[in-house]
Image (cartoon, rainbow, N blue to C red; front, side, top):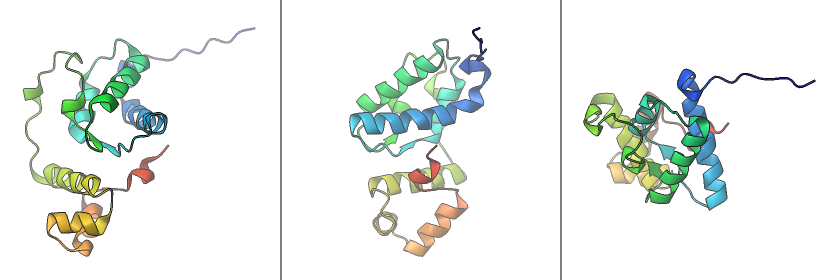
Length: 147
């Protein structure tokens, strides 16, 4: 006897999206011999606003597209295909406050290949201050997010 398992569409379980994105990021890093370390908060928010008519397969294709266009080690909103829906980019205002500080940390760390001393020098702060800010803004090493 065959058992049928009903799996709700991705749009009905959008809370799974960050884990799926991380899973695809890891798979494409291994498959394409890349070192993409992060998906920005803005990109993740945009992905979560999409209705995902193509379900998880569509998400996989979007992530593959990102790996083809990303130039650094962070997938940003600009890496995402324009066809992802009708939500205009203007709906995402510039980041301010804590989010921009967190983003600045992530960008410096990615630029430095997660070498904290190098990232601290880029930000013109001490390594100790960098560690405190990482803790304050919940910035973890990418390996700490692995599934």
